[in-house]
Length: 283
Image 1 (cartoon, rainbow, N blue to C red):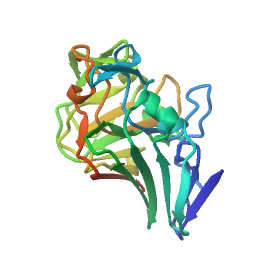
Image 2 (image 1 turned 180 degrees about the vertical axis):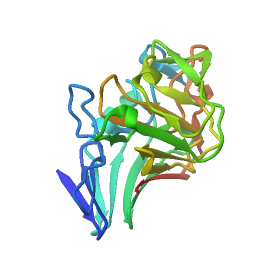
Image 3 (image 1 turned 135 degrees about the vertical axis):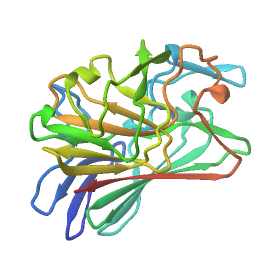
Image 4 (image 1 turned 60 degrees about the horizontal axis):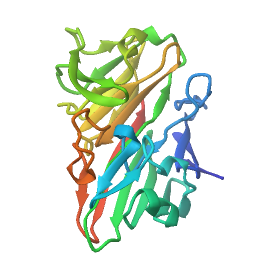
């Protein structure tokens, strides 16, 4: 099933499986979300919950019990319920069940709220803790922006001056090694060589928005005020770029394996609610 939102400027299509944004078009019917061709990558904009990235050996422990959880968690593979909708907004929800409790021992509700405003789609993540104890989780976005021209015709402009020091991955885990992108100007011109070692992972940035430029002209802006960490990713020869706001990230190679001590993890108090939002603006 799908839900379509629209206003006079843009339209968005959300697939109920994973509550995944699969299309974002302007009034001229130009597509801004990657088509999901599995030759390169078979997704569009999956949500990452209740973890971001990979766990060491795909396992973690909580209260002395070990659990298995695959990379990026299970929400992207679950069918969401459409809770409410209008022409310009829709709220989707999943709740804990017997299957999720086997791998994630917490009672929760997880909502994704999409709202169109002019040429912007706002995407909010709401987590409700239904336990009488703390809930530990991470959440992140993975939108793939479609690029219709040659990859080298694009650049990314950071909101603020940055030292682009990113963490390197080792077996899908975050190592202690960093690499600085040799750039003296902002924006940063794109090329596939930047991604030869997988995603660019920034635990923290001064910027809270990134603008993709096409032939030096503003193309798409992603704002992520509520998200301290960011991943930027593509694959060789693929016509898309993922701008990924994260609250949390993959295990570090020195991680203890205990969920409540995981670097970047969010602790949500008993019966509390959590809300974070980012946006994608067509320019």
